[in-house]
Image 1 (cartoon, rainbow, N blue to C red):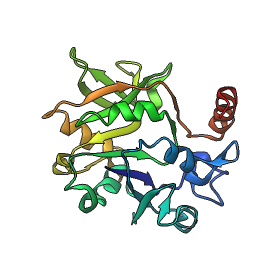
Image 2: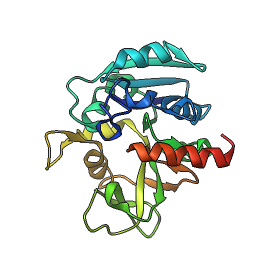
Image 3: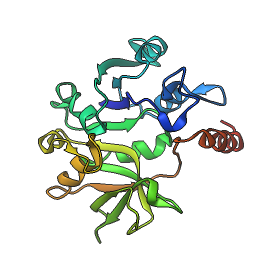
Amino acid sequence: MKAVILAAGEGKRLQPLTFERPKPLVTVLGKPLIQYVWEALPDEIDEVILVVGYKQKMLRDFLGNNFKGKKVTYVEQKPLIGTGAALMLCRSHVEHEEKFLLMYADDLHSKSAIKRCIKHEAALLVSHVDDPRRFGVVVLNKDGTINNIEEKPKHPKSKLVVTGVYILPPKIFYYGAAEHPESDEYSLIHAIDKYINDYPMHAIETDFWLPIGYPADIKYAEEVLGKRGK
């Protein structure tokens, strides 16, 4: 099974930590974020399609063509016009697969939760948070499938949010990548929201997720991981 990992962004919210390195190489307890992501990949994943852009040579040098037993294939995103556009660049690498894993190169996740997620044809990991306004907010149907996803709403309809881990079938490429109404970027969430109008997508609640968006999140992650003995 293949995984697509999005690692092209400049990590502006994490500045100044990203002035000299790409966000996936920012460290938590001395270990780069991308290594935590790699270690959370289920054993079923044998190849990673890594979308790179900002300071990509550093990532290529760190991971090489094979990292921790998984083949690495690089796809360059230029210009950086959103996560939806990044996914579309990977189409030729995964369109003949039954399904593939998609995730970001920086947040910290539970391997066991991702393993539960890959059992489905289409699914995403979700988590309950106190303030969902900075995330994609998920509304469920009565059967537990996803009704809709609203990106960073001012008035969230639930406290259940997208964690950035998806299991997707190649049919997702038929839905394209919609341009975000408030920017010139192409949004992954908008493409997925169109997909779930036609097909069911399961919401799998994770048991561990640490989103890394700002410098303060690094300190918090170190405290949490320190308590877990990581």
